[in-house]
Image 1 (cartoon, rainbow, N blue to C red):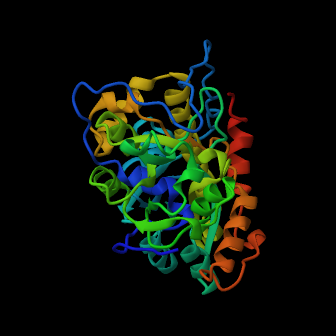
Image 2: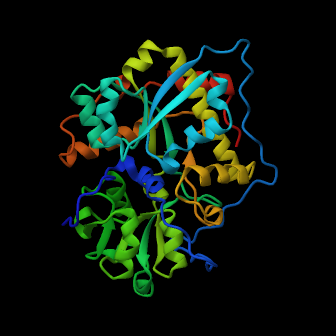
Length: 380
């Protein structure tokens, strides 16, 4: 396997959908044609329930909560959706919280700031760099998944696919046909998601020629023939179909079902010294993700949420939100510990992480447990 191209900031498995939500910066073309169907597993259109059930609201507090300011490390764009939707709907204010958000290019640059006490909360992908930072003594706690990859099924497709250059559609029928071809990957080091997608088709990393190309630049690389296929995300999947550049080939949800592409983490000092504030923050964060899930997958207050997105992201065309596939949200604050363990195994095998961490010391579910106890389980 060879890896080519310039170094990029969104590289690890934990950044699968984090890079998706950061990369959404290209406006849509006018009067687009209908998107093409997938080549390997033809996806069904997303369906909305006939009688959607909104998530349960929080119980009204008996007394106003003590005011507090929480310093948050964000990613910008859709990565911070729970923060700005939660603020727009008053969820954080109801908990007596004011957010001070500092935007970072990626989670790797956020970690040192969290370790100094300048930030209380961060969000991003969990990578080998994250684990290595914890091994060197950076005190962090993973408290919730944020973005999740669901197993594909009727009405449920993920916004992360292997896509194929359209002019190869007649000769490449599936991922196995990509053997010895040039496949673009965001980042400089293959992650577990890339390896798992190839393994799903009885292939290894050495069976393809991995090219390092950022998500936004993959459309140009496909269009000019620099690569044959790519691990691509929305909105570039939709835009690439509308421009006649690509066709979807394989939904990554088949290879890494229930994995998380983004997590929420607390600085250890914040969690230990302000446990009540940390619990209240989680309540508002879960409410924000539930409101988004209701809007985009049940159609409840959908236009309102899209307008909040338009005001807070670089995707300013409301119609593009109707055409693109959306990320799924972790609406009960769970953490997929098994997936994190698989990430560590992969990192150690690849020489990206020197040793494994006991996840019982890293993952703290008490805050999401509190939120779910207060709000109840999300009703699908």
